[in-house]
Length: 97
Image (cartoon, rainbow, N blue to C red; front, side):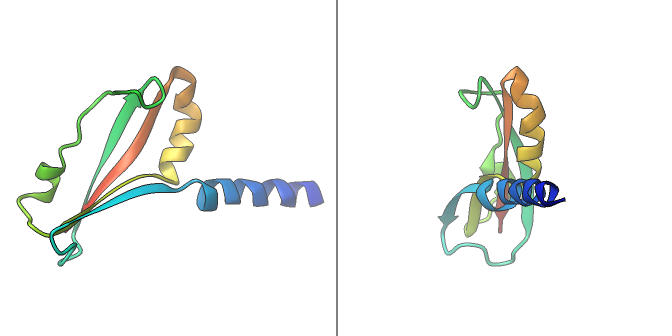
């Protein structure tokens, strides 16, 4: 029973505490209305070559004050566990207006 609790605790720490890595860029005065737009950026060869392009200007829809948050967290980590075997990884891009 003790081994199961330790294993579960390590899994929770890995996924929710250690796992989040984010880059935040504030444009203008930052978010004013707190509306969010999200897209997923896919990479091959462990992040060396992008498979798609997430256009932050399109997501911002002409806003002058917003925040760009690029992160690998929660769902990305779970998906990357399975897709990294074929060298595909993902990150989530969120625009907050």
